[in-house]
Image (cartoon, rainbow, N blue to C red):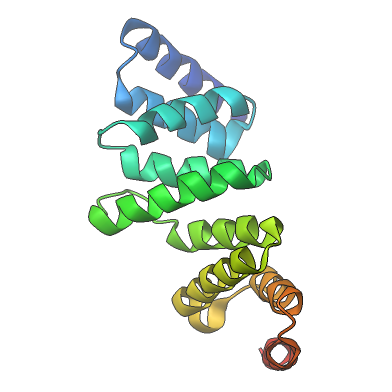
Length: 171
C-alpha cells in the first residue's frame, strides 16, 4: 500500500474516533498504521495504545506489548519495565492477542534492566535475555548476543562471556 493510502486510512480512523472516542478498533488500527507504516504521530500513537493497554478491551494485550516497544524505542527504561512486566502478565493470563511480541518484550526488559546498572538489575537483565535465547533457540540475531555479552561483562562473568563469543562465532 502506498504511503498516501496509509495517510487516508489514518484520517478515516481519526474521523471514526472523533465520533466515538471509545471505538477501540479504530484506535488500535489507527495506531497500527502509524506504528508500522507512517511513523509520524509517535506521541498520539503512544497515547492511544497506552489508553488501550490500561483498560479491558479486545486490543489490551497487543497494545500493552506495543507500548513497551515504543518506550524501548525512546530509551525510556522505567516505562519499559512497568509496561513490559504488565504486558508479560497479560500474555500469560490471556493470550488472545493478534500479535505475540514476547521475545521483543523480553529483549526490551533486558535492555532496560541493563541500563539500570545495579547488580540486582543486571541479574534481571540476564534472566530476560536468557528468555530470548530460550524462545529463539539458534535463531537469535547478533543484537541478542551483543546485549547478553554486555550483561555478562557488567556482571564480571568473563568465562561465560568468552563461551558466548565462541557460540556466536560458531553460528
